[in-house]
Amino acid sequence: MVVQSAPHRASKRPLNRTALNTTFIPFAPDRFHFGKVRREEVLLCFNPPLDALCGLGDACQKPHAVEPPDAGGRACADSGAAVIINVNPVCRGHALLVPSATAGHPQVLTAKGVRLGVAFSFLSSPRMWLSFNSIGAGASVNHLHWQTFFPGDDPEVAFPLTALMQDNAAAAAAPREGVSLGTTPPEWPLAGWVFDVAGASEDAAAVEQLSLHVFAFVRRLQDLDMAHNVLLAAGGTRAIVFPRRVLNQQGTDVSLLQVAGHEVLGWWIVPRALDFETLN
Picture (spheres, rainbow, N blue to C red):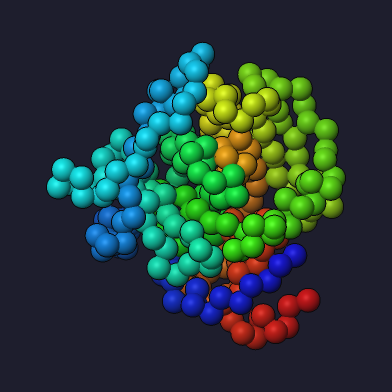
């Protein structure tokens, strides 16, 4: 495990819920959401031609998918996503991917949200990770979004779970529609389901299938009102889903320890100095 001191994370916004027993909270336009950020915090608009990117049977060429946020004098189109700087980052490249940013969706993953996340991962550095934290699994803002981040600045560093999986390659089920299903190693403290694109990473049809398989799994968790973290990696060719019990560790105090996207990968973000000094 890696422990990172991050005292500035104690200034991020809390969910402001003293009690929590569900993953579904209605979107509240009067509360903070990403449609209220300053214009200078919007880095770019991500609006890939998903049909061209992921069309079954099509040859894949990575398309030009970004434009300035003020193109045409408007905000990012609802067909795509806004990429917003994280004002309390834990690493370089820590940003937010907000699908249909002005539509006011709560932090509940949608089929389109998964496709945009996978497409963004597909078109980004293979070292970049994306995480979706449901309500009750680390989300502090009830507005549909992914987080993008890296395992530190050193290209030789990997998240502890990644290193463990490389050393303990588990047998996966036979690929189905281009996607294989496995699990995290049994010695990892939290069980996760691992979806891998089988074959060439440039196969856009398989990347589309990854989106479909991941959302089908997440939809089952949503039906059960079960909290979850979804991680995307390896250039849009791997997804890991961690089903969770609903927790509310940072409901009102964001300086407390919690388990969210970084922590399920073995990288603990620690706001309080006392916790950092006493963890073992």
